Image (tube, rainbow, N blue to C red):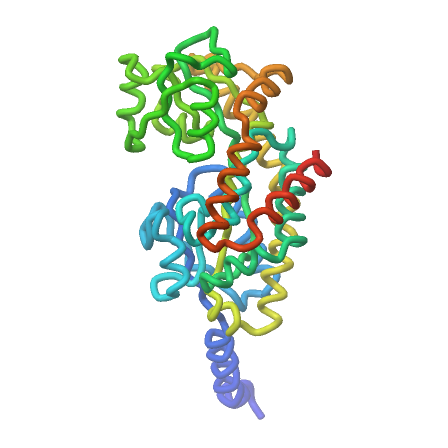
Length: 346
């Protein structure tokens, strides 16, 4: 048998193997409301998605869409739950509080662990030890694949003599209903404003005395140009968790080996989240200072004063009572479990 005849006989089998390989690849469409240029999105793309393709040996491929191409942030839960436009994506619990009430409790703690590793450990234990969180997602036709963390909150203000426990006569903007209550308990007036650079203009004109928001978002609207005094700490962790969730039917339809591959990729990813947060926070504060802002780390005494003035435990108790009146189960038990877990991790 000559070489040409051998090639002619083998070619159909080679083509068949190639076709089967292509057919065996599963494409998962991903949606994210943020662009692919920040800490969280880079980790998702470069670490998690890369690990998924590696662990699945190419069986899984992520068709990733960013910057709200498929869904804006407030519609993400609905989009992924329906599973028509996207199979998976990032869900921010705060944006759908009525559908994910128990997830709101994370943000109710004014202070958290003092570094990224401990914060990641807290969320890992919360999601692995408290089944009510996965049950809440399942009720919305979602399965959480991996959580991601963000930058801490920061106080942006023109006032270099800011006292967090004495904000009487000042006007602030913050999005979180928890933080609104805490600012009010410190004596501030809280106003609602659309999220755009008009907030920076309001800081410049004196309409706003300050802004309480995660550090990177404040930088996005150049708030530091009008409010150069930035007070920040890793302990102002915000409790702002990002859930990378998948449509439940899509998850159930995956082969077990593909589910296992995603789980292994999540384990690999989680190992880098803490150090990534710490190094990114350090780099951002250095950059802001170089640009002309005055970023100052809050002292332990200042942090304690903020927590004490916030009267957060009373605010939490009031919220639990409201949720119980709405028929939300496990609100009080979940709060107690998270409080204990936070003490253990810190």
